[in-house]
Image (tube, rainbow, N blue to C red; front, side, top):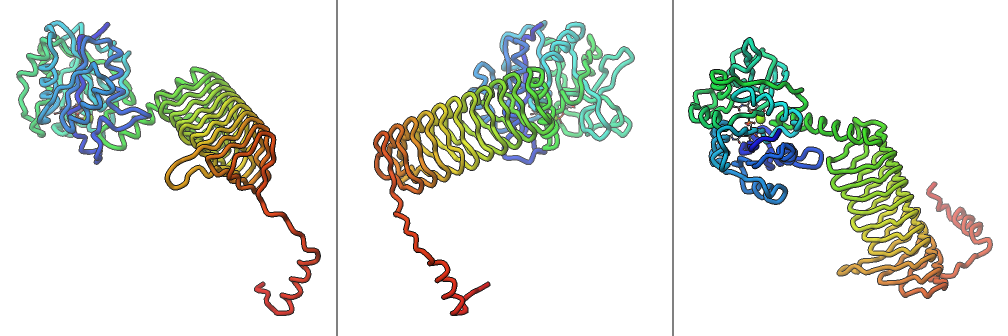
Length: 467
Ligand code: UD1
Ligand code: MG
């Protein structure tokens, strides 16, 4: 059952957030609050979605134009209340017949489910309108729902306008409604700002509906309809969003050792039989294949990880790709544009940037590889550094297939080490190494027999020991 139109109210400033960012653009698990609401709105397949904007309208409008280009936005110049906001929104929606249904969503309540809205639409068909209510505690500042003996909503009293007995009521208004357009237009035209806030309250239409065909009520759990007004609400909503996301992955066959401490953003994909240890963060457009293990403390952002790989503890991977059967870390750093092909390994304290590690190649310990191409099966020894930057430009290092780079080598780019060549430990490579050659640049070692004993006794005679 689809709605003719969905109106999203998003003109308020969100003063209680104490933020430079407008409330509806605050992030919840990888996307703004408003984006969650818009996705749910479109899940109802309405003919039109309108968003009422006001505070920082250009920022919100620009966001909508980019992410939801089909949505309309209507400017509410002054925020005279939710009733006024809906009037502004309706005026911008053309061709709404009186017997079509408009769903009104609060731009600050991101977790409403489309299933609940479908039930709301069904309820609305039997009445003038329907609303979503939820159980609340007496400290919460939501509007209070008063029901009649038939269980329909009789009126809503805002917390600020309520006396102690009304504040004690345990059913709150979620700020989500479905209304017949004809009824809504008429009811809005009669609203008066006779309340503590001097605003036009949308909530006053409930009492008007009660004297017409009634206002049906759909109950939802508080976790689903929490509106974000403060940072505490934002944390509560984020934690519920996380619970839903993690549950979806577990249903899809992913093991989360401790889902409460695993942060996975909404667009992340994880394949079957992968295992994710506690305190892992998977962010942005990240995908993880099947049978991969992600150990504790790993942070992965906008990256692609293949099947049967092992990302060891406390590694950080951003804008990189790791293929199948690879090992990364512990404590490795894969920076943007890094590519690890099948079966390659990057070990502890290795940083790579804009570097491709071809199939089966390894850099197992303490290395920096920047702007490099490491050929198949090549071995990069501990402490190897690409000197890729001359203070002006970045230069490329190529280590061809099967080459062996000894420990503590500096590769001064641009430079190429040929196929199957060797570079001796401690070498500073400043010119290309031909295929199959050995490059060695360190000073030849000299051993002086008995030198240590002679040195010690000379120092002791002079009484120079600081011990
Ligand atoms: C509103 C309800 C309250 C309900 C609560 C649920 C009213 C009068 N009160 O209170 O009963 O329990 O939501 O979260 O409706 N907005 C505009 N223009 C305005 C005013 C608000 O677009 O002039 C938008 C806000 O951006 C927000 C939504 O409407 O997205 C709700 O406004 P808010 O100020 O948060 O209302 P609450 O005090 O939460
Ligand atoms: Mg609110």
